[in-house]
Length: 238
Image 1 (cartoon, helix red, strand yellow):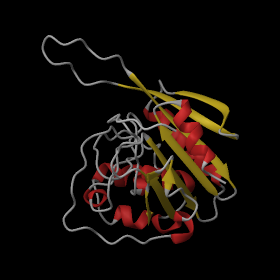
Image 2: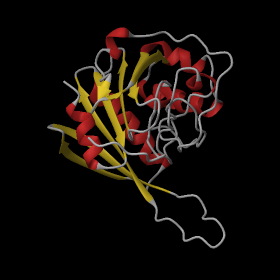
Image 3: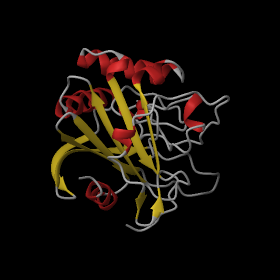
Image 4: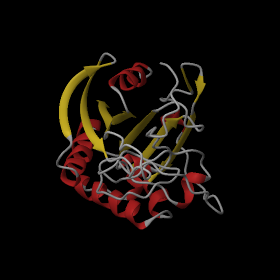
Protein backbone atom coordinates (compact mmCIF):
# COMPACT_ATOMS: atom_id res chain seq x y z
CA UNK A 1 0.00 0.00 0.00
CA UNK A 2 1.44 3.34 -0.95
CA UNK A 3 1.13 6.50 1.03
CA UNK A 4 -1.19 9.27 0.08
CA UNK A 5 -1.54 12.75 1.44
CA UNK A 6 -5.21 12.86 0.59
CA UNK A 7 -7.05 14.96 3.18
CA UNK A 8 -10.12 12.82 2.65
CA UNK A 9 -8.80 9.90 4.51
CA UNK A 10 -11.80 8.45 6.13
CA UNK A 11 -10.34 7.75 9.42
CA UNK A 12 -13.08 6.93 11.70
CA UNK A 13 -11.19 6.60 14.87
CA UNK A 14 -12.55 6.08 18.17
CA UNK A 15 -15.98 7.10 18.41
CA UNK A 16 -18.22 4.24 18.22
CA UNK A 17 -19.87 6.78 16.22
CA UNK A 18 -17.83 5.48 13.51
CA UNK A 19 -19.48 2.37 14.42
CA UNK A 20 -22.74 3.72 13.38
CA UNK A 21 -21.09 4.36 10.19
CA UNK A 22 -24.38 3.90 8.82
CA UNK A 23 -26.40 6.21 10.76
CA UNK A 24 -28.15 9.23 9.66
CA UNK A 25 -26.45 12.18 8.19
CA UNK A 26 -24.59 14.41 10.51
CA UNK A 27 -21.73 16.19 8.87
CA UNK A 28 -19.86 17.27 11.94
CA UNK A 29 -16.28 16.16 11.87
CA UNK A 30 -14.06 15.35 14.75
CA UNK A 31 -11.55 12.94 15.98
CA UNK A 32 -13.91 10.06 15.81
CA UNK A 33 -16.07 8.30 13.29
CA UNK A 34 -19.38 9.83 12.66
CA UNK A 35 -22.66 8.19 12.21
CA UNK A 36 -23.63 10.37 9.34
CA UNK A 37 -24.34 8.55 6.20
CA UNK A 38 -24.18 11.31 3.71
CA UNK A 39 -20.47 11.71 4.07
CA UNK A 40 -17.54 9.45 4.83
CA UNK A 41 -16.34 8.96 8.38
CA UNK A 42 -14.42 11.90 9.62
CA UNK A 43 -10.69 11.81 10.04
CA UNK A 44 -10.02 10.74 13.55
CA UNK A 45 -6.68 11.68 14.93
CA UNK A 46 -5.91 11.19 18.55
CA UNK A 47 -8.03 10.15 21.45
CA UNK A 48 -8.00 13.67 22.76
CA UNK A 49 -9.49 14.99 19.57
CA UNK A 50 -12.00 12.26 19.43
CA UNK A 51 -13.47 13.12 22.73
CA UNK A 52 -15.44 16.29 22.45
CA UNK A 53 -17.18 15.29 19.26
CA UNK A 54 -17.19 11.73 18.19
CA UNK A 55 -18.26 12.00 14.57
CA UNK A 56 -20.83 9.68 13.28
CA UNK A 57 -19.97 6.94 10.81
CA UNK A 58 -20.21 8.60 7.49
CA UNK A 59 -19.64 12.15 8.51
CA UNK A 60 -17.73 14.42 6.20
CA UNK A 61 -14.01 14.90 6.62
CA UNK A 62 -13.24 18.05 8.50
CA UNK A 63 -10.58 19.38 10.81
CA UNK A 64 -10.55 17.62 14.14
CA UNK A 65 -11.55 19.49 17.24
CA UNK A 66 -9.38 19.22 20.31
CA UNK A 67 -11.30 18.06 23.32
CA UNK A 68 -10.92 19.62 26.71
CA UNK A 69 -10.63 17.80 28.89
CA UNK A 70 -10.18 14.36 27.35
CA UNK A 71 -12.81 11.94 28.61
CA UNK A 72 -12.15 8.48 29.90
CA UNK A 73 -13.01 5.65 27.52
CA UNK A 74 -13.67 2.04 28.41
CA UNK A 75 -10.97 0.26 26.46
CA UNK A 76 -11.36 -3.22 25.00
CA UNK A 77 -7.86 -4.71 24.57
CA UNK A 78 -9.26 -7.87 22.97
CA UNK A 79 -10.92 -5.90 20.18
CA UNK A 80 -7.90 -3.65 19.74
CA UNK A 81 -5.72 -6.75 19.27
CA UNK A 82 -7.75 -7.65 16.15
CA UNK A 83 -6.61 -4.52 14.33
CA UNK A 84 -3.27 -3.66 12.70
CA UNK A 85 -0.81 -1.40 14.49
CA UNK A 86 1.10 -0.74 11.27
CA UNK A 87 0.18 -0.81 7.58
CA UNK A 88 2.90 -0.64 4.95
CA UNK A 89 5.28 0.53 7.65
CA UNK A 90 2.98 3.35 8.72
CA UNK A 91 2.19 3.34 12.49
CA UNK A 92 -1.53 3.17 13.15
CA UNK A 93 -3.30 4.41 16.26
CA UNK A 94 -5.66 1.82 17.73
CA UNK A 95 -8.39 2.96 20.12
CA UNK A 96 -11.58 1.49 21.52
CA UNK A 97 -14.69 2.47 23.48
CA UNK A 98 -18.27 1.48 24.22
CA UNK A 99 -21.65 2.81 23.20
CA UNK A 100 -22.01 4.19 26.70
CA UNK A 101 -18.86 6.24 26.17
CA UNK A 102 -20.37 7.83 23.09
CA UNK A 103 -23.68 8.66 24.74
CA UNK A 104 -21.85 9.98 27.77
CA UNK A 105 -20.27 12.75 25.72
CA UNK A 106 -19.89 14.07 22.21
CA UNK A 107 -22.25 15.81 19.83
CA UNK A 108 -25.99 15.24 19.75
CA UNK A 109 -26.03 14.05 16.13
CA UNK A 110 -23.59 11.25 16.96
CA UNK A 111 -25.67 10.23 19.94
CA UNK A 112 -28.81 10.18 17.79
CA UNK A 113 -27.08 8.08 15.14
CA UNK A 114 -25.95 5.58 17.73
CA UNK A 115 -29.40 5.46 19.28
CA UNK A 116 -30.88 4.61 15.86
CA UNK A 117 -28.43 1.79 15.34
CA UNK A 118 -28.98 0.29 18.78
CA UNK A 119 -32.73 0.71 18.41
CA UNK A 120 -32.64 -1.24 15.15
CA UNK A 121 -30.81 -4.04 16.94
CA UNK A 122 -32.92 -3.91 20.10
CA UNK A 123 -29.85 -3.27 22.24
CA UNK A 124 -28.52 -0.82 24.83
CA UNK A 125 -25.39 1.39 24.65
CA UNK A 126 -23.46 -0.87 27.03
CA UNK A 127 -24.01 -3.79 24.61
CA UNK A 128 -21.86 -2.20 21.93
CA UNK A 129 -18.08 -2.06 21.75
CA UNK A 130 -15.94 -0.59 19.02
CA UNK A 131 -12.27 -0.30 18.10
CA UNK A 132 -10.55 1.41 15.20
CA UNK A 133 -7.12 1.62 13.61
CA UNK A 134 -6.08 4.75 11.72
CA UNK A 135 -3.04 6.82 10.87
CA UNK A 136 -3.06 9.68 13.42
CA UNK A 137 -1.11 11.82 10.92
CA UNK A 138 -3.78 11.21 8.28
CA UNK A 139 -1.24 10.37 5.62
CA UNK A 140 -2.63 6.90 4.96
CA UNK A 141 -6.19 7.13 3.56
CA UNK A 142 -7.65 4.02 5.14
CA UNK A 143 -9.49 3.31 8.40
CA UNK A 144 -10.24 -0.12 9.84
CA UNK A 145 -12.85 -0.61 12.55
CA UNK A 146 -14.40 -3.56 14.34
CA UNK A 147 -17.80 -3.63 16.10
CA UNK A 148 -19.36 -6.14 18.42
CA UNK A 149 -22.83 -6.03 19.93
CA UNK A 150 -23.66 -8.50 22.69
CA UNK A 151 -25.91 -11.29 21.44
CA UNK A 152 -25.93 -10.07 17.82
CA UNK A 153 -24.14 -11.70 14.88
CA UNK A 154 -21.72 -9.53 12.95
CA UNK A 155 -23.79 -10.03 9.80
CA UNK A 156 -26.87 -8.60 11.55
CA UNK A 157 -24.87 -5.56 12.69
CA UNK A 158 -23.74 -5.08 9.09
CA UNK A 159 -27.31 -5.22 7.83
CA UNK A 160 -28.45 -2.64 10.38
CA UNK A 161 -25.62 -0.23 9.54
CA UNK A 162 -25.97 -0.62 5.79
CA UNK A 163 -29.74 -0.13 5.97
CA UNK A 164 -29.28 3.07 7.96
CA UNK A 165 -26.73 4.40 5.49
CA UNK A 166 -28.90 3.64 2.48
CA UNK A 167 -31.90 5.24 4.15
CA UNK A 168 -29.89 8.43 4.69
CA UNK A 169 -28.19 8.30 1.29
CA UNK A 170 -30.32 6.52 -1.34
CA UNK A 171 -27.73 7.33 -4.00
CA UNK A 172 -25.16 5.03 -2.38
CA UNK A 173 -24.35 1.99 -4.51
CA UNK A 174 -24.44 -1.36 -2.72
CA UNK A 175 -22.68 -4.46 -4.07
CA UNK A 176 -21.35 -7.76 -2.76
CA UNK A 177 -17.74 -8.32 -3.79
CA UNK A 178 -14.64 -10.29 -2.90
CA UNK A 179 -11.82 -7.97 -1.88
CA UNK A 180 -8.66 -8.87 -0.02
CA UNK A 181 -9.78 -12.50 -0.14
CA UNK A 182 -12.96 -11.75 1.79
CA UNK A 183 -16.59 -11.46 0.75
CA UNK A 184 -17.84 -8.04 1.74
CA UNK A 185 -20.79 -5.72 1.40
CA UNK A 186 -19.40 -2.69 -0.38
CA UNK A 187 -21.01 0.74 -0.31
CA UNK A 188 -19.80 3.35 -2.77
CA UNK A 189 -20.78 6.93 -2.16
CA UNK A 190 -20.16 10.22 -3.92
CA UNK A 191 -18.65 12.96 -1.80
CA UNK A 192 -19.41 16.58 -2.73
CA UNK A 193 -16.32 18.71 -3.16
CA UNK A 194 -15.93 22.20 -1.71
CA UNK A 195 -16.85 25.18 -3.86
CA UNK A 196 -13.81 26.32 -5.88
CA UNK A 197 -12.11 29.63 -5.25
CA UNK A 198 -13.04 32.46 -7.62
CA UNK A 199 -11.60 31.76 -11.04
CA UNK A 200 -10.63 28.18 -10.17
CA UNK A 201 -12.02 25.10 -11.91
CA UNK A 202 -14.36 22.93 -9.83
CA UNK A 203 -13.03 19.58 -8.67
CA UNK A 204 -14.89 16.46 -9.80
CA UNK A 205 -16.92 14.65 -7.11
CA UNK A 206 -14.92 12.10 -5.15
CA UNK A 207 -16.04 8.58 -4.32
CA UNK A 208 -15.79 6.88 -0.96
CA UNK A 209 -15.91 3.17 -0.15
CA UNK A 210 -17.04 1.33 2.98
CA UNK A 211 -16.50 -2.44 3.06
CA UNK A 212 -18.29 -4.51 5.72
CA UNK A 213 -16.92 -7.96 6.57
CA UNK A 214 -18.73 -10.09 9.15
CA UNK A 215 -16.94 -12.83 11.07
CA UNK A 216 -18.89 -14.56 13.84
CA UNK A 217 -20.04 -11.97 16.35
CA UNK A 218 -17.78 -9.29 14.93
CA UNK A 219 -18.20 -6.82 12.10
CA UNK A 220 -15.14 -5.30 10.46
CA UNK A 221 -15.38 -2.12 8.42
CA UNK A 222 -12.70 -0.83 6.11
CA UNK A 223 -13.14 2.70 4.78
CA UNK A 224 -11.01 4.19 2.02
CA UNK A 225 -11.12 6.14 -1.22
CA UNK A 226 -10.19 3.27 -3.57
CA UNK A 227 -10.73 -0.48 -3.91
CA UNK A 228 -6.97 -0.92 -3.70
CA UNK A 229 -6.82 0.64 -0.24
CA UNK A 230 -9.90 -1.31 0.85
CA UNK A 231 -8.29 -4.58 -0.30
CA UNK A 232 -5.05 -3.77 1.50
CA UNK A 233 -6.96 -3.03 4.68
CA UNK A 234 -8.91 -6.28 4.46
CA UNK A 235 -5.69 -8.24 3.96
CA UNK A 236 -4.56 -7.16 7.43
CA UNK A 237 -7.54 -8.94 9.01
CA UNK A 238 -7.35 -12.59 10.03
